[in-house]
Amino acid sequence: MMLVLGALARVQGRAGVIPEVSGAFLHRAAMEIQIDPLGLTAGVAQNGVSVPGLVEAMRKAFEAPEHAAWLHYGATSQDIQDSGLMLRLARALTLIEVRLVGGLAALARLAEAEAETPMAARTYGQVAVPSSLGALVANWGWPLLRVRAAAARAPPEAGGVAVGGGRHRHDAGA
Image (cartoon, helix red, strand yellow):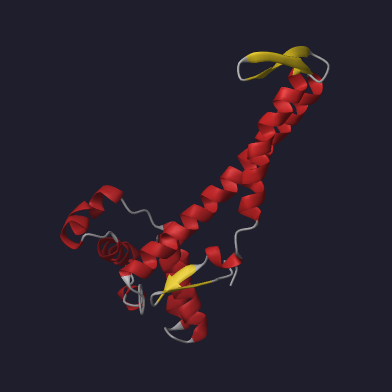
């Protein structure tokens, strides 16, 4: 959520919604400060969400009230929470994709190495026609390939940021 708050300030500064120097300061500072998550517990208990306490802690850590006043400008706590969740999910999906590719590569190597290793195929627990361990291992990859294909078909609007109750695509490099 700190990254979301910093990115929001940067975009708002570039757009002239807040002072540009404040947007640049908040963006940079949000990536550099350290906030103790345990220090947010009282705010979460009071508000039911972590954003107000996080904003307060960030403003204090910035030690620059002239810039800190612009943090969280024009966004709701729900916007910040939803956008933070989307960023975390995007990172998780990237990690899952890397692991899927690695798992598929390992299965392919094992299937090729065991392509000539004979074994009895099974149907309903009964011995069926002869097969190979490589063929069995290759079949293990099909569900992973389907998951990878389904993830690739996800619409681009599945990610993005939430502002004003709606989701919007945002180029992280903007």
